[in-house]
Length: 308
Image: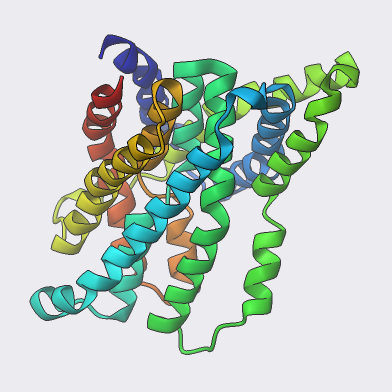
């Protein structure tokens, strides 16, 4: 467990640092929104391109890792739909609240998963997390948008718009470009490599600061039962299912640990933006993100420690 805590400790310190910076030095929302766009469209793609271009993909079980992540997402989505009638009866959950529960139980915080995987296993960990991202991101986009349109939005689903949004995802394209460059990585000029490395190294710390800046501590004063339900599904059930699937696929060592890492992280912070734009329960979504992030300080080391 000591190496796990050593890898996670700086991650959570940076999250705390982002929280403090938001309240002491950089209070304006516009600054953090600009940083998030820079990270999402420039710095994270640079990290993924460099990682995938240099990775020894012969050592990465792409099908097993990607398949485990893909099936884990589908099973958690199915669990949410199965629980919906019960939660509606017992907790009075309406359609918009269900969409926030759904996002909180299925989406993952890339800004946390990549640094943890990198701290634990270096470039191999980043390559494995990138494979997980390619497997999870398209299906999660489709499922979350469909759920919001069906249960929260008065409009019908515009699948052309959804498809375009997925096709324009810079993180997916970064992985594709990195894989395409992999066979000719040695021919990439050194100044280009240096630029990509500089952007990539900076992205990990900045991403965690942004996560911390987005925390709303006031949301933990009165935690709703639906929030706790989302936390149990995302931080307990999803890693447990992923472990079972990964073991069934014969994964072990770094491969198994990164799968657990990617399923044990809290929900993505941009879930709140999607909820607000498409008629979901945005206050509930904000509470789920905050509470999951705080609980993950305890649950992530436990989940990763179980398989290491």
